[in-house]
Length: 349
Image 1 (spheres, one colour):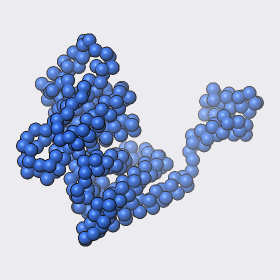
Image 2 (cartoon, one colour):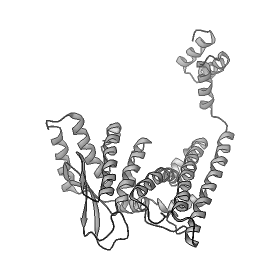
Image 3 (cartoon, rainbow, N blue to C red):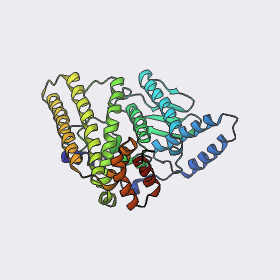
């Protein structure tokens, strides 16, 4: 675990606050005017909301955040808009043509001197995500697989109720977190390396598999780097976070082991090393899962956890549990719940 966390600390290193890009005043002012104009258009309210969500999503990917919490207040609609963007990104990779829908445009700028999606660039090529209804809202990517990874990462964050988009804000942090360039193990960059000759579909699958692990690792590192939170976090909560990280690591490293084995057969020193590295990492993660589960099982329940368990048992008809819960609730001056337990004791619950 320490080895994995050490590598991930480098991979997800928080950038200095001074690296954060200032919001361009001109674009920001035009954006505010655009949002105000949406409210006056003769379109359905939901369509206006989705257009505004597309604007905010592009701005988040460009590193400008969501200071007004618009995504947090419209999570269900955001998932719908992101689903459309996933399909659009998939089409962009498969067709090598500029694509668009009601909310986004995806296109390439610069000389076509690379195989689309490849990071082995010879010329200056960028891939642009633009809000279809507001050309000034744009985000630039170095490779097509980055777009898919950004979208899935944001989707996973919303699913987890994580609305802290600082991950996208600093250029250094974005580069460390999202960079999926071919890397060799033990170089302090996470030890992640794709096998050669992945198809566009396999590139997309790689990003989907990597994103949950990266987010789980980020959660661990956020706690390690936050002394105040680290001192307040309860042992069981901390070990559950570590358990989630180990479970995601096991899934992703098992996937990497199988992917390298299928693509290369482990033939040759380098390929053999990669197959062994990810197989060993997956086995270590599985050992960590079992170890952490045992620790969690041995952590004494808190008073609140004990009380919650008693209340649940009482509501299922356990009168003895109701009596014990009632005594605890009376001591805690939680009169309403204490009365409920009393009624269950009397058979009237």
